[in-house]
Length: 144
Image 1 (cartoon, one colour):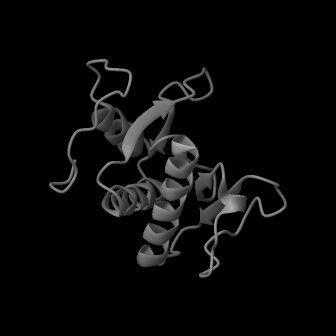
Image 2 (cartoon, helix red, strand yellow):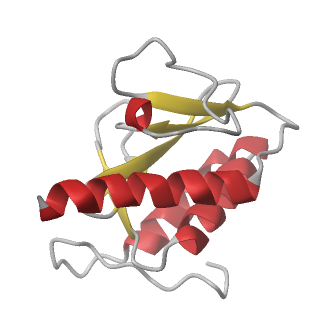
């Protein structure tokens, strides 16, 4: 875990150190996809200090689960794919994306995603803006 990340505990109040679980998921990937997901994670955590890390959807095909970042609902989900790392925003269709970061799932009425392939970089400032916008959408719905 890098020095700018604090341990994020299980939101259900459990003793599990979710940050360590996500560290293990990322290190288990082992190639460029792990480094890419690690960089995305750092940008997500820097976007808002109140964001919560979770691990969801543990199943036989993915026993370690999937990293999820939430605040008043899911903000985004990070997944290593065979040839890309995907950052999925469940409410992405409702977000403005002036920098055109979304490049997949564009036909969905709700979900949008960003696929990064080996060697591709992302505009970190634009990603942070997208994260903050997703949080604002979640918190507005939670307040209503």
